[in-house]
Length: 157
Image (tube, rainbow, N blue to C red; front, side, top):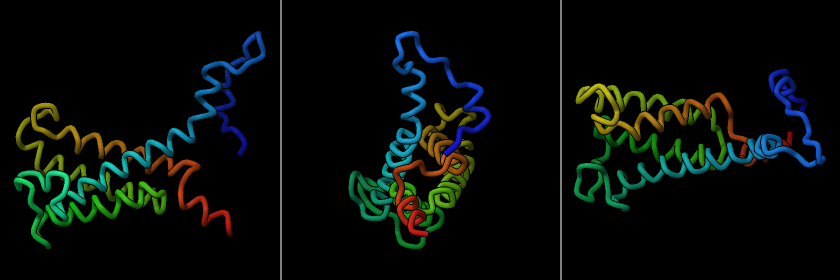
């Protein structure tokens, strides 16, 4: 793929000894690090859903190791979004759509649950919601990166 005008304008000059500069090596790794970022964020999000739905890994928050009752608003639906969107983002299938839904759910969680308690996330316990919200929003714009299930089935077209 050809570099974008921004990438071409910011291409560092080669070093005098002929090897790639640190910036060039980091830039070359960027797409793969993006995929790793997506996988980790998706996994962590899915684990929240698994804990809430199945009572494993400490269970749902505030349940003393229990689960969220099926169909309860908003907890059960949030856990389903966490599980499904987290898994889709992790494997890189429908990443942008799943990330948009996940980001929106975390924005809702922050403003509906945490922001009422205090202004700043550090004061209201909403750091995870804010971080997930912005991480998923980033993935909406960057896409899944090169290591993604969607890359496999798009090559067959």
